[in-house]
Length: 396
Image 1 (cartoon, one colour):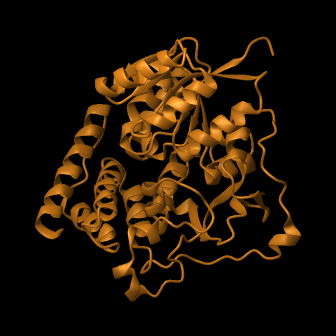
Image 2 (cartoon, helix red, strand yellow; image 1 turned 180 degrees about the vertical axis):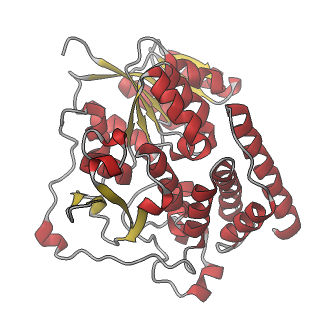
């Protein structure tokens, strides 16, 4: 290659960010880290800067920036520390950058991801909330700028690999009948329903197959994560909600499937390791080594499938309803869920109340059109306010 590909990693200290840096480190003749960002795990961000020597690091506030800048100078590094959302947008849109890995969890990742889109970058999208909140506006911006959007979620990356290259013409035009989105079922797949009232945050975060942050782990336990992925899949692949079917697959070996009108079903398989979809997206349309061990089908021996139970996983139903409603509904769903999950992790509410608060607020608040980013953030802010008010009335 004529030069090293410059990569900005948004959310470098999270599980996706760390996996990305592991893949990048395996290919020093191909990739170079341009910028790393972190929110709270700043000592880990410092260690990553020392290892990867980026030109920029981004932290949430001025105090954190001063501390990190001093530590970097003490380590003999010239890395410049930037602050806040403005800094995130700067390292996402910088002219030197080729690829942006969008791995900030939650609504906070929307603006910097859009900055990368508007700048026409290659975007590796792990921040599903960006599409959930502003799907139509986001995809319109992608088309306008000519940005390349590649999914990093293992499920969406699997779908991408199983789709024909011209799937953008429309699913019916390329012979696709439906998308089968797999889910592990999380830690509570077989827990008696009555016991869900008493599960702890640590139990909810104990995912059987994947190592993830606490917020996304709770989303996996409630299957809201799969609901958000359903909404994201609709935007990524121009599908209706009724063309996306969720299938529980406890082994997490088949990462998703595409069903064609001729009866063919294509699946992407692999060990449950985020480095596989990351390597696929980083090098696309080529292939590179990810460091993931080959899949041993003899050791796996069996693959199981189940239909999700709406009584056990009401969040999945709520997400599908939001996808069908469109407009402000997905943004509000995401906002209330973020507040509810934080309250559960703080032990202020019980696990089943995550779905209760979402359903109550979305049933009372009308869906409104979102024609610009301001309307998206207005819907997000209103939903958070309603969720906080709910917590004041009902939470401990």
